Each structure stands twice: as C-alpha cells, then as structure tokens.
Image 1: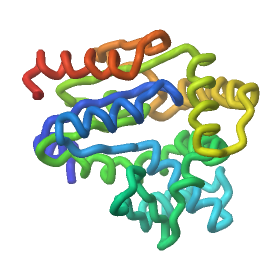
Image 2: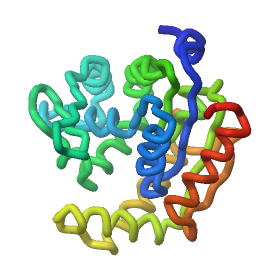
Image 3: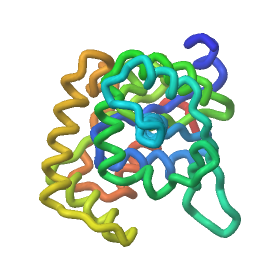
Image 4: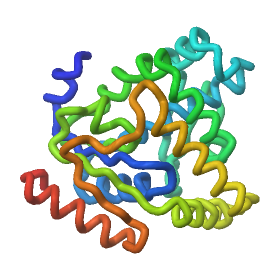
Length: 233
C-alpha cells in the first residue's frame, strides 16, 4: 500500500515524543474517546526486539532483523473481562515481557537500523483505516504519516518521565530502580534523537506539549480541542 493510499483512507492524529512522556496513555484515551483505531508503533519495534531475542539474532545483524520485522507473526487480543491488550508473538503471550526496560532498550537499538524501519513502514501505514487513526511513536508525524491532519509532540522532563516509568513498573509488581531507569532513559533519548534514520524530533507543524506539570486529563483536553479546531470530532 502506498503512502498516499494509506493516508487517504482515514484521518490521522500523530502523537510523537520520547519514552515516558505519556504518549501511550493519551493515545489509548484518544482512540477510545473518538472511536478510532490505535497504532502503538513502539510495540512493533519491541516485538521485533523480542523476536530477535527468541531466535538468537544479534542486534547488529541488519539482514536477519529486517527479515524478522517483515514477517512478524503477531496478534493483539482483548480477553473478555480484561482491560489490558494481550500481545501474542509466534503463538506465545509476550504482554509482560514486551514492557520490560530490557525490551525497550533493545528496541531502541534495533529502531536505529534502516532496514528494520523500512520493513515496518508499510505495515504501520496499513493501520490508517476509517473512521481514523491515533498513531503513537517517535516518527509518526515526520516519516510514517507526514500528511496527518493533527500532529502533537508530547514531552516532559527526563526526571518526570523516569518517575512515571518507575511507578508504572512498581504498580505492575515488577522490580525497578529509579536511578537505573533515569540512566537508561537518558541513553535512549540520545540514541533516538541522534540516529541517522528517522530521528526523534517534532514535525514542523506539530503542536508542542510539555506534560511535566500537566495531568493526563489536561493533556487529553488540549489535544481534543486541537482536534475540534480541525473538524476531526
């Protein structure tokens, strides 16, 4: 499917930003509020990272990683009576493993590889179906959906982002170190912003939002108001 074909199918709102900025939460709330489709692009890179780990593929083996990315055997399943989306990779549930810091760090390394990004590009664009799409990622507005009707760049201080991630992991019953999370976020930010292909940066026309001192509800209302101005709801 070509870029123009995919973008003409339905309107797109992109939410880009660094890890821990609140993109995932806001995107889920937006998709529910508008009744639109949701693309968690980070999950695709994390799934590629897990597939590489499961198959013993090195994070610098571009050819093998490109093949894995192009042929991911994945399913997203909502179990009756459960709120969390279940993620199935090659027939095995990886929902918890997908959100580990180790997985995110490996995904950040893999996301810098041009062949992997190319392999996943069309797959991401296929999500642009009616009635519309909320796209969560790092290059949604700059590369994947450059024609999106609304682009948002959501940020927060690295200290606040680390604290949010720490609380998220603790609430899930997982071991976590705030100090280690802060160090890893700083490394991930550097990788994501400095990579040669599709670096993390705001689209020229993006609405800039710093959520450091904002509640989830406040961020959601700002984005919804921007959507109203554009006739998207």
